[in-house]
Image (tube, rainbow, N blue to C red; front, top):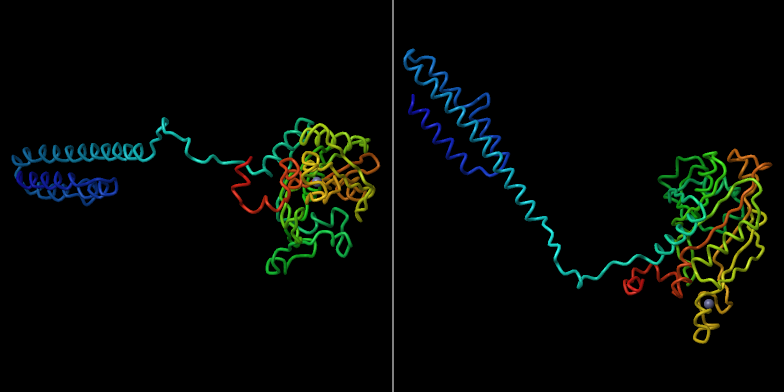
Length: 355
Ligand SMILES: [Zn+2]
């Protein structure tokens, strides 16, 4: 019997020696100490031994069981230590490594401009809001006083989400790629927390013929203030301050009355062309951003329609509001003297590396 115990021990040691992971160790553990453990078989035989022999074999069997259990535990710790050592080796970082030959990443000019605009408006106590790029028709058009079949919808050639998704939806619930960031204004108004003083930067989509000023997707920033006694003067001062901070001190703004079929009064705002201002002799009339007019249309502004306010549950008798929107792409082009906003979407590293 002693020999059997001895053989079992040798067999165990041999198997243990070749084990190098926790899974195999678990199998070994089950084989020797689990319910079907090999020691169990031996204990069955012990039953038939004489009492004197039992007295000798019992302690031996117990000793073997303790030995196996300790060895398995020790092996488990060794395997864990080895695993950590491997991780350390694989993930080690050489802090003295020379990084100079690696090209550094650059922020995209649109991100730089958007972040700067956010900083400027936050310094004027505006809150930054965001919304989904896939919107429903109700928020993108209806609640902004642009009902179905309204001629204003032609201003924005819309990318609709596939018929497959839209076919079972009610007309106002049909989903589309938002054509402007204005749905976020409605979302904010529906929170019923006044006063509202927000900016909404974000990506929008239109089915446009592409040229130096137009692209199929671009970035807008909208501004919305709803308060008592908001005047056009507030709008003008805020815009002039922001543009001078962003571009340069001598930037001129030109306000032109304009007609948006869904708002009244409305204005379009041109900013003096930065490219021409700095390279007058070189470009002059050939500037593709302003076509030689010295001004670029960068912003538009309007008074929030009383209907829009009342649909959102805000009393138009007490509150009024102005909103404006701007093309971040065109502003980035002006700020960095890039003569076509299309270049921002061509993934050209040579352009990005300059910023
Ligand atoms: Zn120009």
